[in-house]
Length: 148
Image (cartoon, rainbow, N blue to C red; front, side, top):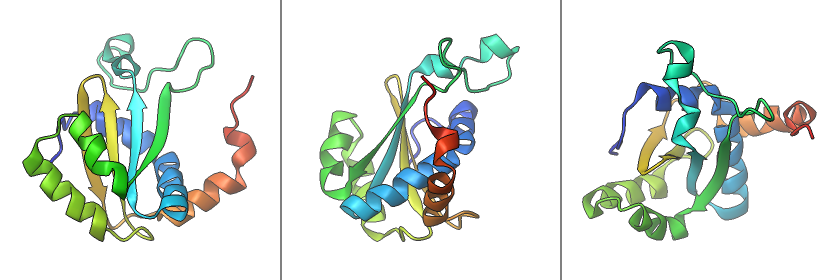
């Protein structure tokens, strides 16, 4: 599978939010079958200038929360999503079979949207499975609620 932008801040963004990615992967699978977790963010979220060159997740000024959006794209809707992102046909041909064959109980496929870039990854041999991520978030839901 091709990665479109193997940028370190993107990898950090994924790592820092792994429980949420796993939660959405399992919830999406339970509701829609196989698919891809999409994490959208404004490129300014990864603003290294504010941290002396250290790439860290920038928090929004008003809530101290990351400005991220998670959604799940079911397998049947994925070709249209990838075409809208102008993913080359040759890459789509490798992504779709991966989505059709990954093991949702132990693996996940994700896409990171940032500005005009999209990164796609397939996580295998996870230390924490998507069902475990789902259980951890569900048990601790009150800690994750948005404070208003």
